[in-house]
Image 1 (cartoon, rainbow, N blue to C red):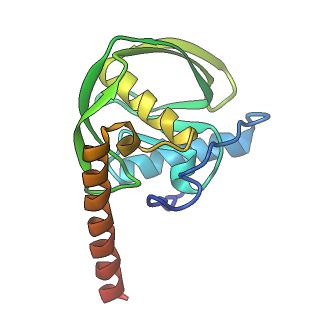
Image 2 (cartoon, rainbow, N blue to C red):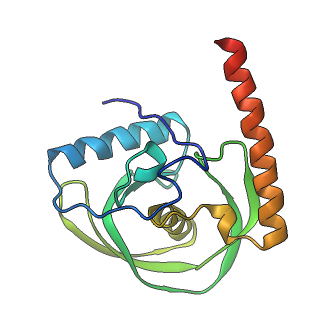
Length: 173
């Protein structure tokens, strides 16, 4: 397995809709495994194809104390309820928002990393992870879900954090 590079916002392909897979083959299975390894290495709970530079409809996720799961070509069939919670993102490291609105539950249909069909309902934190990663497949990042004032403040904090990160990298080179 291999660690993949994380794409930082607003770099491509984070801002566009990802394409579906025509088939799930050994290459997709390998990609899913590499994405899981990368997600764990960066201490995330989810990671979508666009976040590793692959504009395809795939994401991996892992709720604490559960096994990782891969969703290929996912569809959110239904959602309901409302809750707000804290979110961060591996593509906007060090940036968090406290009140990101999401549905309290979702019903999802997808394929797993071997092409087997899945359909299930998720609640709470699992539903939040799914919605966050699903957004990445549509070119949406969590600040897009915030009110305009909070969004602008969050993106300004990200621009400053990214500038500092780039300075750190430049000093080490």
